[in-house]
Amino acid sequence: MDIVLSYMFSLVVLYSVFVNPCYGINFNLFNASRIFNHEQWQTATVTWYGPPDGAGSDGGNCGYGDTVEKPPFSKMISAGGPSIFQGGAGCGGCYQVKCTENDACSKEPVTVVITDNCPGCEGLVAFDLSGTAFGAMASPGKADQLRNAGKLTNAQYKRVSCNFGQTIAFTIDSGSSPYYFAIEVEYENGDGNLVETALQQTGSNTWMPMFRSWGARWALNPGSSLNPPFSIKLTEAREDNNNKTIVAENVIPINWQPGQVYRSFVNF
Ligand SMILES: *[C@@H]1O[C@H](CO)[C@@H](O)[C@H](O)[C@H]1NC(C)=O
Ligand SMILES: *[C@@H]1O[C@H](CO)[C@@H](O)[C@H](O)[C@H]1NC(C)=O
Image (cartoon, rainbow, N blue to C red):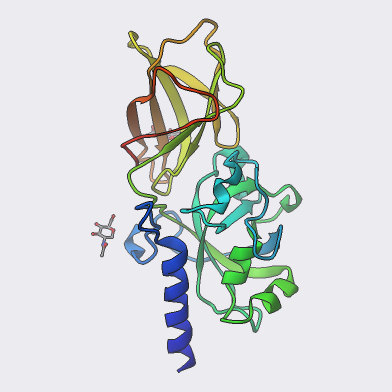
């Protein structure tokens, strides 16, 4: 009975957290064949930060800002230790995390997105979850009990494929100008890391490589004024070397503005 109830509860929670018809974006939680990089659960140290029912910190080191509060992330985020954050290449990666070592653990996995760096996690395979995500690993009614434990040294994790829908978002960094162009790239599908980003201006056949300035921010110092609209090319590296490249044609419009979000019609 308990198992059935807690299973139903977690389905309800997962449904409400991850499926938002308004956005048409959802995590593909139930398709095990999509789990790619790490078939086996591996051990990690898991802690939490920020407010108990919060999203960790707004403005984490990936540069996603307050989108961590909103669907599809919906506060289900984590900071990653060095092997997870990977100097920013790990930003946007999806993981399942679960615990069994505390009485409050439901033993059911939660799915989180890496949105931040965990500077205190050196030397550990570590996830510093939002208070919301940490509490979501608990059985119904036991979130506070689990959060009070604070640190789980024997939790399990595995990489899973993100499935945010068909739209990648490009937020123009507020410091952008005709001579310096930077974007934050968000909501990539799949289980690879974004390793290359390039920009093509109108009237040119040349892809200008962008550099990772930090987190999920990619920048370009073109040396002269750029000619919009711009197409953006993204390459995701995968563990099986089956890297994938996509192009968002003319995704940045002629009248682009710093701070604006532009959405592609392509995804990995
Ligand atoms: C699971 O994912 C695989 C690979 O993307 C796909 O071929 C398959 O149809 C999916 N199965 C279900 C039940 O969605
Ligand atoms: C895929 O990307 C990784 C990381 O950039 C790179 O090391 C690897 O050579 C690439 N593989 C292929 C087949 O291009």
